[in-house]
Image 1 (cartoon, rainbow, N blue to C red):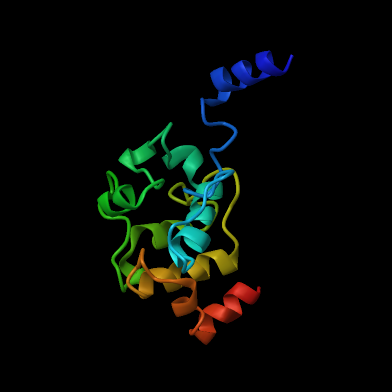
Image 2 (cartoon, rainbow, N blue to C red):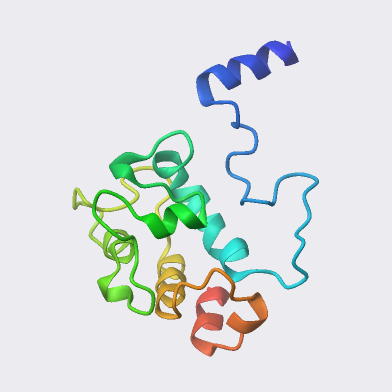
Amino acid sequence: LGVTSHFGGSLTHGGDYLTRYFPLGKGPGSQSEDPQPSFFVDVIEPMLAVSCYQCHGPEKNKGGLRLDSQEALLDGGDSGPLFVPGNRAQSEIYYRITLSQDDEDFMPPKGDVLTESQIAIIGWWIDHHASFTMTMAEAKTDPELAAWVEK
């Protein structure tokens, strides 16, 4: 029964259905080689995994956009670059996640909608040059971010 369920799940949900929503590099048994936790890997990426990978991940890439790797984030999609480092107001991802939920361009259109705090954190990350290398220690020095994380 277990083997049949596994193969059935793989057929209907894809071969990675058990680990799809683990943040990259955070699957069972993996250990980070970096002694300093990464703000992107530990905060931004899990939000994207839960709310965005269903449509913009390894199995689908609606609008020519994938969000499951740093390279894909930098490549953008059919609408152009995903973000402008240092400027959330000119960033496509920030524009889309802050639209009214009734707007046809609102993201994500279904599934787990980002909370106000998560949107603020993504905006803060973009304003701070959308750094993939910023450590958690570097990010925690900002009181504005700390207030959102508290929420």
